[in-house]
Each structure stands twice: as C-alpha cells, then as structure tokens.
Image (cartoon, rainbow, N blue to C red; front, top):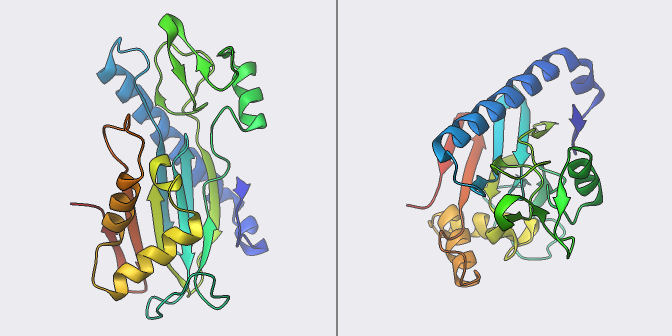
Length: 232
C-alpha cells in the first residue's frame, strides 16, 4: 500500500487490513471499468477518471485513476481563512501521482503494457486516431496500455482533518490544492455551497471544448458523521 502524508508506524502495523481495503478498492475499480466498457460497447475512446475517498475507523483511504484529485483539508472549520496565512488550513493531496503521459513513471508503465504514443508524445494513441492524455481510467476501449488499476493510499485522520475535496482536472487547472480548500472554507463561513463555488469558478475558466463542465464533490468529516456535498 503506497504511503501517504500522515501515515504512521501504527498504520503500517495494520498492513493486513490495509491490503484487504486495497484489494476491495481494486476489485471495485475493475468492476466499474467492466461495467463502463459493457455500457459503452464499441464507443472507442469513451473514458473517465475517478477519485474515491473511503473512511474506515480512524483512517482515510483514497484511490484514483486518471487526472482527477482528492485533497484533504487539515484546518479549523470555524476559522476565516486568509490566503497565505501560515496558521491557516493545510491542503494535503491524497491522490498522487496524476495518471498522465507527462509523468515519466506512468508513461513508462503504459509503454510496458503495450501503449503507443502519439507523434508529439503527449497522448496515448489508439485505433482509429483515438488519443487520450491519461494512462489509467475507466473505459478507453481500443487504447492498448491503458488500465483501470488504481493507486491506493492510506492516511491516519487527525482531529483537525475537516473535509475532502474531490474534483476533476478542470477544477485543478483553475485552483491549486491550497486555494481549493481555502475557497471551500470561505464558502462555509458565508453559508455557500463549497462544491458549487469550485465548479462555478472553474467553469468560468474552462476551455470552450469542455462541454460537460467541471465536477467537484466535498466530503465533510466530523465526530458526528460524514456529509456529502456536490453542485445542484
């Protein structure tokens, strides 16, 4: 199991449980990929990235494929964050690395699995002129070398861990991880919807070809339970 920021010897001592969780997440991703491919049929190039956050006891497991990311906010929900404040919330990226051709290890991994790169080297090439930037995702029928095997990490939760932001690349092209958590905390102080704030800002800066628009989800962590928030 890949270590993540906050992983402790106590977490490593529970490696058997961690392997069980990793196996369950890998099986779930494989099942989703198979369902996606059956649904897409022969629709070559149909693909999607995915990020998952799973809370079990005092641990937060994260898994992802593609270029979407999940970020943990370590900070006080009652505070009014100010950008650059050293005492403000800390953003901890859970899903690393991005599964894209630009990451050398991912490019090499895809090539070992039989991928072919475009002439520019920026995309994985498939049949019929298909080109995709990610090296792992759901779908991608007709693109050799692309898999749906997730990277899985585990983080021991602390009392100050307050929320998780999961979003697609359109959001992260607009926000840094730190900016994202600060904007969500600001929205809470002003009774707004954090996920909607991220999506609307990202939509305003999205490339014209992005027809579906940015996607963001905020998972709130507390001793009383967990809450899910996403744009309406």
